[in-house]
Length: 348
Ligand SMILES: [Zn+2]
Image (cartoon, rainbow, N blue to C red; front, side):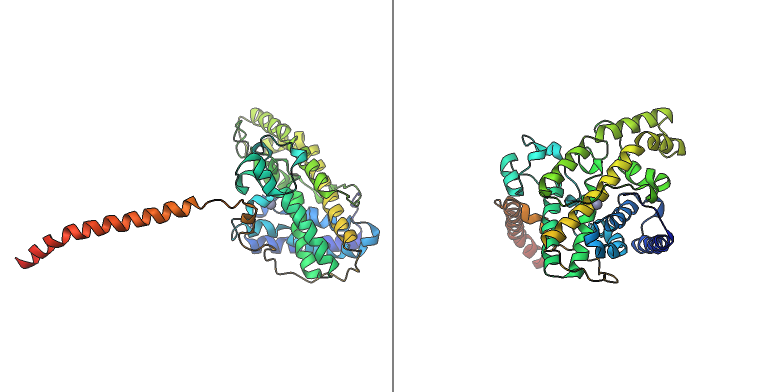
């Protein structure tokens, strides 16, 4: 899909940019630092809404609201510590499990690899699967307000897992001294060099097996981690490690812009394909005009990621209660020993 902007589209984009500015200001986000964490998410959801097949054309009118709320899941992180792991997967923690053959049940995975925290493994494949099912259900029940919120969030999680550094344990290049590359590549580099008009997504299609398709794109993203690190090292060598210089970003962009564009284009294709798949599986319900706005609140209950954990004996609680009991005992003994002295002092 080549996005050619006509007069009508130009007005829509102008309005879209205006909303983007408002959202950025409201969220207190620095405009110069919007990448996959901000501007790219908005671009991807916007382009994905316009990329759905003609039979779902009414969904294209949701482009602005889906774009505006594409960044909501990142904003939920501040109030909900369970939110973070939904945005990534760290296959290096999944020892003994083939990445493209991950169990669909997270508790089954934890049985295989031993007890693990969602913070270590990441939750992205399971959250994408769950959010897609939820989108199908709310579309089928014609709850379009909730469908808008869930679709916007699904677009966010799908886009995140096309960012190669969201698909590795070495997400910030710490292992081999590429430290800081995460933000440099996803935010600072595209802030000045990325152009929405260059998006060229493939056509949206019905996805028979979303679980496997998602694992394949995450595995492919993971394979692009080393090329990003290599581009970073080369740009640093040629700029004497000046990672804030224009020259550094020019060099990084020159050597990784094709990869960057490929991942963004694939994001748009996959987001629009999953929205289309949910709608088909929901029975192709009539799509009404989009809501003016949605509340932007989390679609999850607080702490919901914890439900993925195996229930284990609460050793932490036992240790805390034991420590409190020991402290009370010690204080009681000390008090009993001090009392006669106090009495002697008072009596003299
Ligand atoms: Zn995110």
